[in-house]
Length: 238
Length: 273
Image (cartoon, rainbow over all chains, first blue to last red; front, side):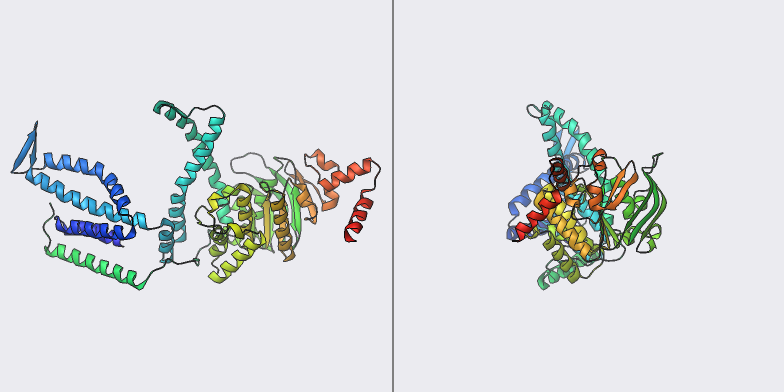
């Protein structure tokens, strides 16, 4: 809820002040949660490739009246720099909001809480199984790699040698995963997974009154922001 | 009661049947052992007797499967799951892949049945206690040894409290202590009226656990009778099934001219005194 409100808010408010305020709130929250350092690193890593392309495209191709400098046929304009700056602060506000959500929320708890709130158990299973599939495949690849190495496959040394070592893993990892699918689905059916109707989950994610109030406040702020944007209170989007 | 009558089964996409005219009946509270060489059709028979073949995996079944008087052909898979469960030999494929702890893994079946939380917890605790899994109850199911995974898989089936249980090599990855635990749990389950079909290569487990043993070869039932009679039959070895240690010892003693029954009776008397 907070991540959605902050991400949408960064877009709705526009300009510099709104997204920067959201960024400050997110970073303060991350500091309280003890994940500020990791959040900054992850957000910068995620934002950097998009940021570079946004800056290059905006600064040099955005039409404007004030040319700051030129590189070949491309003019860097004040309007382009302003557009890039506004886009960057919004991108940072969004990436930190989503990053904070990822760093502070257990995916399993999140999906099960969604199921408690009405998400179908099948969808919840697909979401959770997808989350679990990656580490399971990495583990399987490790086992297969060890078996291949025991039979003389060289997986160390130069990048080229390592790449050569990865290729023999791809087939067995994918094929063994596929062959297990049928038995895995049968095992689930045996445990009544296909039964229609709701199931009673064993535990619930703690949700205090303060958290409920905070979510309600965020929702109210978001709705106000939408209203203000429609009424033209916020600066126009570039 | 679970009953197969004249069952012949062909996998989807295959020209030939792999089970031929099988008649098999599991009475309530009965434990039936299923033995046979590799590729004899044991796993297929488990799938057919559970109703999963053809309901889930397709293929063609001739003959009938009746579960507690109801023909399985008319039941949806979740309705089958409420009556009969089947455990497969690979414990890795038994895991749901979505449970964070062993407790949650075992509880998944009862939860799926839509049971109230209290009953789910009670069934889960009972199944865990039966297989002495308390020390690993908070562990990640993906981080267990093969034997532990197999025990968790069986506990997950027991927690559903089915009327009929079919197990395909349930102790393949278990040490002797784990095998004993499974044997005790299955015996207790039978004592509550559950019927069981246990396909196993470990005839020592079946000896003493089963009331009846069925031998299958080439998709046909070739022997069906009291456990002791079938397991003591020298012809069993010709099927590639190793007789239990008791039968081998008896035979070895008989070869030396010693009455094995007398030795066993004397040992029992001495142990008693």
